[in-house]
Image 1 (tube, rainbow, N blue to C red):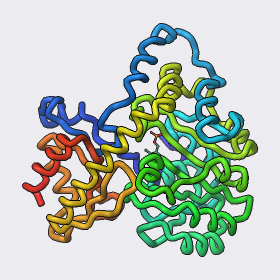
Image 2: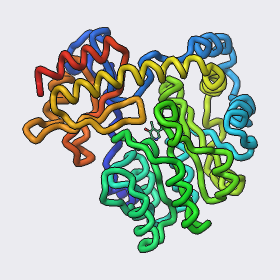
Image 3: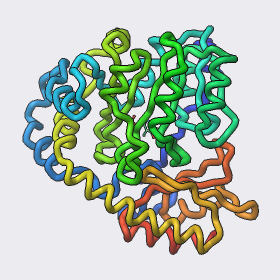
Image 4: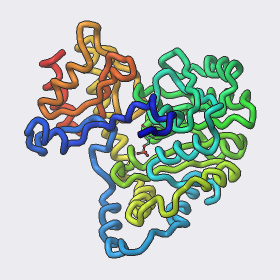
Length: 364
Ligand SMILES: *Cc1c(COP(=O)(O)O)cnc(C)c1O
């Protein structure tokens, strides 16, 4: 059977291996498995979310509130924008899908960093668009600008902090860059890890309200999957000028967010204490990774996220080491598919991280 030609060159996205798979493949008891592969919150989510979701389970028979008013109100208060500036997606992944489908076609070019979130390219390929990448590992906005001038891309992705490397740009540098971009080029700023970045260095914080007021060609993306601990609920959002949101809405399937997910995200946003606790733990435990890397003479990228990227030495092989860890029930992310001899490890609880250090030293 023949399928859409655009799909031919797509490599199916490899999600972090689920615990269930390791149970099946290696016969390891699920309580002995530690997953530090998908940048989930090791503390889970706010207990208030669990109570709130539990209280509305009986509403499952009804379709969700498709206006998403409760969550939109919470987000608009958080960011100081109007409800009409917000679109909610089944993960911010879905908003990325909408924006590419809304703006790009097979004649388009989409500009992104050499190493960045893999889904940008996959959605770009859906529509047959051409992916243009920078060469430097970290976002170099001078190089972005040079390629913007040469290639005239339809969309530019800036991922700050970047996944899977963890580095982040100063917000001012992004504003200076945006000043030079014409208003027909859509710039997506993906802040999936922004909560962690702000806690480490406030210069990384994007002022979302001012951003979308000043630039009507910019969309800011956020998610509940990381600091809020709701990866399993699939909720993300985009904030932009009304004209962009209206176009994205044309692509949104009805009821794309479940009743339980809407409730979970609304309540999660209000429990700032939980997020602060998560961030404090992350900063504290991150130091242990930095010390570990220093002791073992491994390069670690300065991270503004809840994960660390360990760039291994040439006598160490990231694929081999992640497989050896997997067989011991420790799931991390091998970055060989990004052409890096590196592993990405989500910063876990004290115990999970100790377990990682204890295991990985056997394989380095
Ligand atoms: C995790 C992540 C997302 C989206 O996650 P969702 O679970 O789909 O909300 C988006 N961008 C980056 C860079 C991420 O790491």
